Length: 267
Figure 1 (cartoon, rainbow, N blue to C red):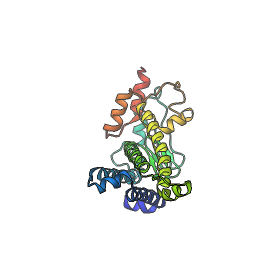
Figure 2: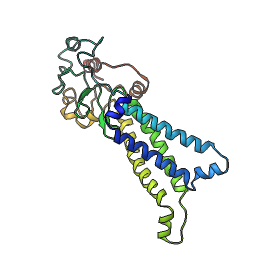
Figure 3: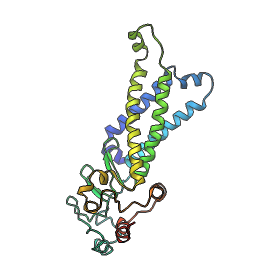
Figure 4: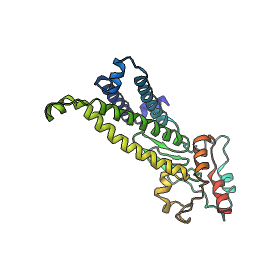
């Protein structure tokens, strides 16, 4: 994990960390609600805000540096079933044949896709996130959603805190001069709040229907989905079951079997 941090995406991760702490320090140094709580000896709100920021940074690095679910190469497979066994498990009338990746030449499990940036195939591929410099896939997708939730809470709290620190001024020029740093922090936090809020909403919706960003955007080009009706999803088990499996199940799913059951017994 540590070598990955310095090998790829170091500039992006450093920028994210620096921006986070610059905004946090700005909010504590100005006359905001957090600063006034400190002066009154009420340390719980500042401590909780600081803890929320720390947790968001930890989650960012966790999602950014962990294996998103790379499909192992032939030398890494270990106990996994050989390619021939994977294909033998799927009745031909019920599921499309597993394809071999045109880039790394590995047999792709269903819902996997090759990421050209990472140069690896990723199980249950969702998307490649440039802000993380990592793919979001089967192993880190749930942590990505948790990170978005924690980040949104921190951003909304920071937005409220920045608004509470704006000071009046006799003229517009003086008002901008006095509140310059807070206004800059307010602009950055406002933009990120909208982006993270939209991302969180989209991902929660996709999780609730057991779809991925790639499948949702490229449905017409995906072999196992393009022949399904627009409203059909062979992996959808209902919102409650989908959310439970996504957040609470830690096992690797063989989507070929789920697809087989769905096409054999459509609901």
